[in-house]
Amino acid sequence: FMTLRRLSLKGSDIEAFAQLIGQCPALNILNLRENKLGDDGCLSIARAVANSQIMELDLRDNQLSEEGTQSFLPTLLTPDCRLERLSLSWNPIRDVGARLLSEVLEDETRAPHLIHLDLARTQITDVGCNYLAKALAINKTLQSLGLSHNPMTNKAYIAFGSVLRHDNNTLESINLQCDRKQIDESGCEALLEMVEDNYTLTTVSTNLGSSYESKSYKFACSSRIRMFLRLNHAGRQKLLDQRGTKADWVQAIAAVQDNLFAIHYLILANPSLCQTE
Image 1 (cartoon, one colour):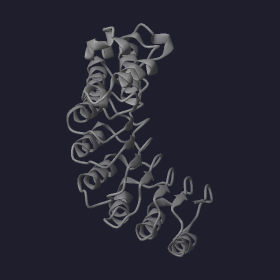
Image 2: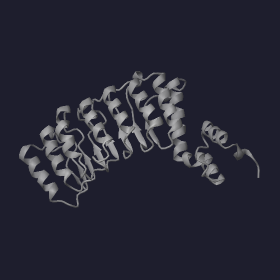
Image 3: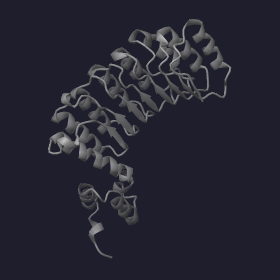
Image 4: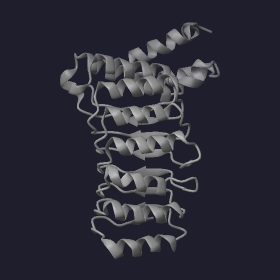
């Protein structure tokens, strides 16, 4: 594990550090956030990491641009790359970066170990979100995707909702927090339908509802979404596939006992729960 933050590494310092990475075969976690590496500096790090045993790389806020991603991503995310977790948050990679990342996710031979990708505050719009959503229809390895605080709108929610409802059962967590004023009822419904039919997702982060909007449609959808996620935590897939014992069903009800909607859902799915022995 190595952390170097806010050092503003430049030129020869970056090259020297990149060489050091190659001399540390036991290094598996590298945190370089907020170092202002720029495109050239990030590329030097990419070359070193691609040939290392590093499994987690944090390059948050390093001034990597959309132009820089065109060299950075193909260099870093290769078939030999060991990376499991990558954070590019707070870098303005925009939709160009999203498109390049979607191409990686669609190719099972590139970055085959990548399970977590954080793209918060990267200025990705609905266009980039659409690229990533389509990639999730093909990718079967990514488990967590962070897209919070990007300028997405209703279109992004609908795109992800459709894909994660029908075409992906490996992603477990997605963060879609954005300006809730940009999301209308159709976006809310897309996410609700997604979690109704997706038994794998256990975390869907939005800011659709808040306590002072307790009577709003968005708040109601947000509450229902959380209910289905809690049911997934309780093993909904196993239960509905009829592989769960009665004890499993009772345990699931106990796990959601403070949510009448969830209990109602489980009883409708298995009416025998109301039968006496």
